[in-house]
Image 1 (cartoon, rainbow, N blue to C red):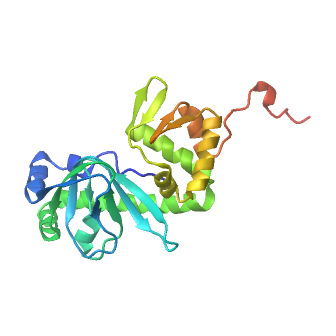
Image 2 (cartoon, rainbow, N blue to C red):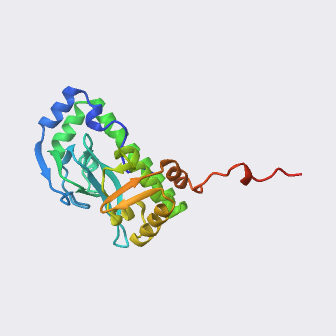
Length: 241
């Protein structure tokens, strides 16, 4: 399960010439924190190339709750699926903080891809990776506990967007509890309970919109469904006699 895209973003994977050509096709846009950049089920087809900041990709479930599918950062494009297949938007994209982007119309984006097979290949690979990630996410929701899913999410955030501090790794993307809940398909109450378990085991510290990972090794073991401690020599099962 992953909130992030591929290691190399779409803009990074383009040649410098193609990157300049794509950005020249659009117009700059600035989104303030909380602004809706793309709305689910809308029929617009523009693509946003993100230059800075973070955006949250989410959908509304049949129960009326919000499920966060991904986080998208600088160098990535959002809205490309609707631009390619010209169907309704499949998700909502919301600015987590200030986001600077370039908006490219669907027509211009399709012409850009048609003239550059390499760029088309990159988009297809990106769409394929997102489908695979969705399959993994469905398996996770069906088979893993809230604690496992939360531990995995926090570990990923720390590894992909964390900074080392004196007391551990500080998550640079400050997701509040309700967003953490939406990112693992759980209730806010269940996430609060799981966070309390992680704090009690001295795996994380939490503050106002801040999570600090203090023991990454234990966090990763919990994400794998293993207990906090590994068995020592005295705790191992004795051999059969």
